[in-house]
Length: 154
Length: 382
Image 1 (cartoon, helix red, strand yellow):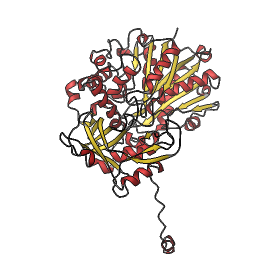
Image 2 (cartoon, chains in turn yellow, brown):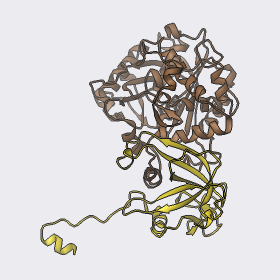
Image 3 (cartoon, helix red, strand yellow):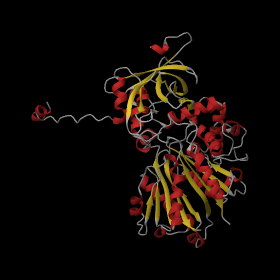
Image 4 (cartoon, chains in turn orange, green):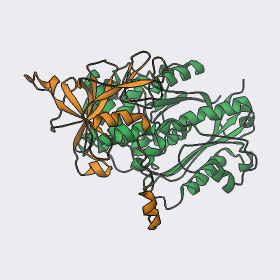
């Protein structure tokens, strides 16, 4: 294919390089199948987020991507009213939350809150990974309201 | 042991649009700093540059410096100006240099605004590009708002306490004809009516993008002894880093900063305590960062920054006057090098209507990137 394109005077497209680096490749792959994953150290089973070049606990370099439940509590948040990012400038205000995941108080993840309700710190949320096209995947939080006993199974 | 002193300071005008290059601004500020202490440019044998802006080679070329044998840059974002003083000090104490030019120059208002700078300044680009940016976070205001919100939750810090910082910085600037917001006071009602940027931050919580340059000449005691001008003693400088300095989201403890470690080290080295400080220059990139750093530096207890500010302590005449020049919020964002300049002026009784009476000890903090910190302690000479 590339040869044919070159023959017609068209430069082949450069191989696509992820701007966000190979360490997020497993997250990207899982997100495209709707799974929310973090890294787990092969050696000491420490759950790691965000991905780093080695395990902070044991300096091991081998990891698995493991699915987590998605439930947590809002640790802090901001409502963004001004964005210089092309894909966000038109959708202000939007709310970005850091959530402490139920798996461990050491495991916090960043995500966008769906629904537009201004949240409170400490309220429970459920997160899912969303992957759209070639954009980097994102985590979306939804507030778990009273009586929503099936939230964890969504 | 060699002692290290600040011999001269120099600044350009601070404006919205300088009309000249950053290299030109740096040369002007450097020339004024040399003039201030009476040293010739031939005497400069060391240069510490800020991570952005004109590089040492450009100054060596334009100033036609022939004796430079030491150059370095600290990379701690906005804390680089103060952390750079530590590099200058180390160079002098090791004998690698005797006269070190430290400078900051930026057309931060007319050219390189914050969202353009952050992608090259911040560490760990894969976390910025791969996680924060896809979630709509790309500026310090947005990232630090997350810290502010958590502090409000844990310690009951209020909107009015944030506002007190903005109002105080602006009122100080009314005593500084060189401040960009001189002649433009800010009342609490004005603050509260300011538009949202990234809640809890309003526009009036943010510092002021600025065109301009500041330069500082750091020298050995042997050099200082030959000068007519009274120098200021650089008693101690230290830098520090929080856990996961490249990632705020996973930081644990979340509100720990590098300044906690830097301040402790600087006070120990200088043999001083926070209570000995007469005037403090706190890196006021945003209102909450002042409250946060007052705690982290030990000027008040952890969690007590809000009430401390509300009590009037940081105003001129208060227990710990902060940023008499108006700071980054009202004099202008010169990467905190203007804080070093103001500390020197205060300790030389040159601050005019905003002079803190008989100030003997000044502290200067730097805050940078995702929570790196630095502190310099300056002491009146003699």
